Length: 580
Image 1: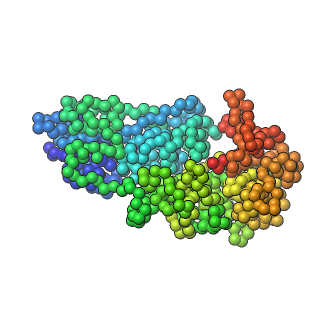
Image 2 (image 1 turned 90 degrees about the vertical axis):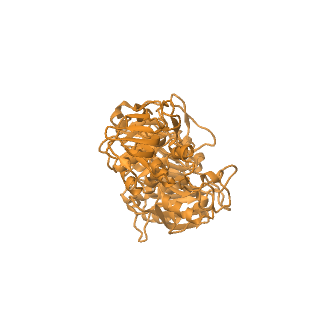
Image 3 (image 1 turned 45 degrees about the horizontal axis):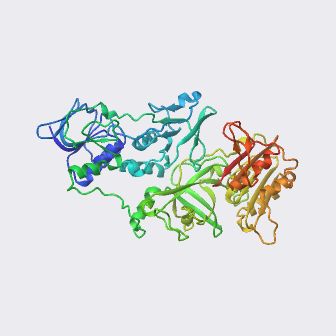
């Protein structure tokens, strides 16, 4: 019987992480016991030369006369100075506070993972290590995973869980939602459509959803007999057995080291202090997080940009009108000299924002572009300046980038702001935008014209100054080539030019004239994107009656003409995408 300094019970990410950190600190005799035939990430074992016994479920812990712990399994009996119970990955459940559609019973899972899920879109809903373990298990099957961690503090996760999640995201195999939770789930076409409580996370549809609906610990089945206080550590044990020390996955080894091996060095880790001069560390962060390259960065003006991004892996196929997320680290320099709040504690994190995918519309030869098949994604972005208490994080950093620089591109291209509602080539399509809100419309207009749409198409774009119209030349070229297309640029602050807003051209009949007849809900689909004040979404009471506020937006003007706002559970012909 071999004596060990530390026995880790359970090949979860937290168990593996603790064993790795112990070895890095210089602890020599570390054994990991796994009840199954494999740990959650088998390649980790060889990479770190871990000592692992498989098919070794622990059923009893007891104490010997000399104070050592006796660890008993059906195949192995060993002694150890200290043990960590890591069979259960830990983490709270996130219980739905809303009704789940009975029709989706086969697509909602709480006790086991769905089968045959390669290339399927899966949402994981939970907190802590369980969510990380489940996500990486699903990623290993080839599924596309979005994990909704619902406010999980990254520092509470084990070091290995954090690293593997970030790696999966960098490889565009997973999307991490740190601060979002499902607000509602509906059956849309036989698949779960998820609505989130965070406005930055648009509605997403999945093939399956995996919930953690309980947090019972697997390890509580182990008998623990009169052990010395502080010799057994337990990950998030519920309930906590007497005499054990409950630790978080992120702090397990440090708690063990401090209590039993204080002379060992702390494991190596990333410095937490903000050090803008540490180029090696910053370059390493870029390698860890960035997964795409900026191929084009055109400045229409100093604060208005067209950029294209090419990912290292994964396709860029999408529907016209959908969005993707871009990201840069807080460690990147800013162009505006402002300072982020709490930078010292968040400097090594990633800033991510969703942007609608635009389109060049015409290629260099003058042909309509099928942007859904392009290897690059085009984005139309404006620099957001600091204002009052608001300090924008991403665009002041993006301002300093150039072609060839690295960036983060999210793996999931999604969104319901698409042409699905234009069901006939003779439909009238009206696009209303402010500023960079025309980005998704560029893709949609190119798609309609490319597919031979012959009904009237009108694009209205309102900006402050004429040089804010980065796509104006290509739209004018479209007007000359396609008689059914009309482009209406509006300016609001140009000297010597009448101030006109989108609402004005609805009121004065300009849009009706451009569409070739009355603005009718019978054959017109309206897309509004950009400033929420321009869109003017109503509030609905329990009976579904709409009430509008001020200023008057296009929704009110169109509803007065018989249109209906497209919203959850109520299909309509006014579709919208607010930009903030």
